[in-house]
Image (cartoon, rainbow, N blue to C red; front, side, top):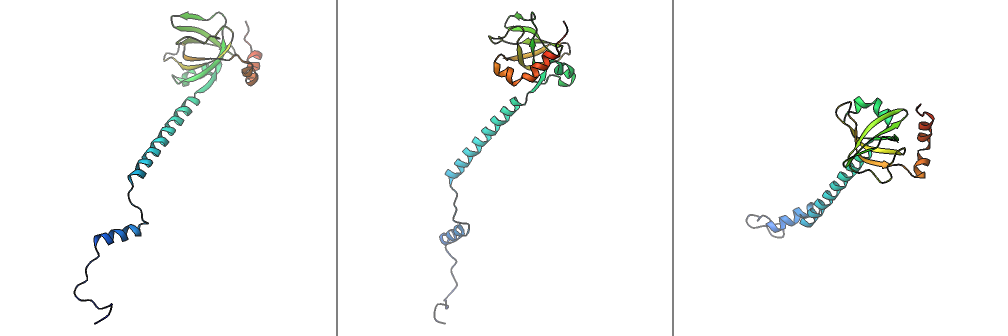
Length: 175
């Protein structure tokens, strides 16, 4: 036996270095890279933070909006759920009690007692349309507990909400 096919003695297995190279090449030549792992972790954390912020923002944006009459009609099912409440401040009802303000709002002949925690905005006054953020207190006879007052005083609001304001004026309460 002579030539390249002839061998003498047992065949030696491939060395571990050549095995690692061929295995690496068979898998596409990729090796573990700690820098890529760190980059992946950073990207995952950023995506998680963005998702959290998006969900928080959507949670705040989905606070339901009710007129005073609708909120009173749905009071039992609303419970202590956080809602936005629209109405007009009843003239003569505003009373400052320490840092809180007690007043009433009305819409379509329905009146809601409100207890606002904190100072009201500077433009807050009798007879103006407001949107309140908060929730009804636990006991059915208790007032709506507000922690934010949005005063609607601009001509932009009157333009955007012209239909609501016209309906409220049309269905005005008898005095």
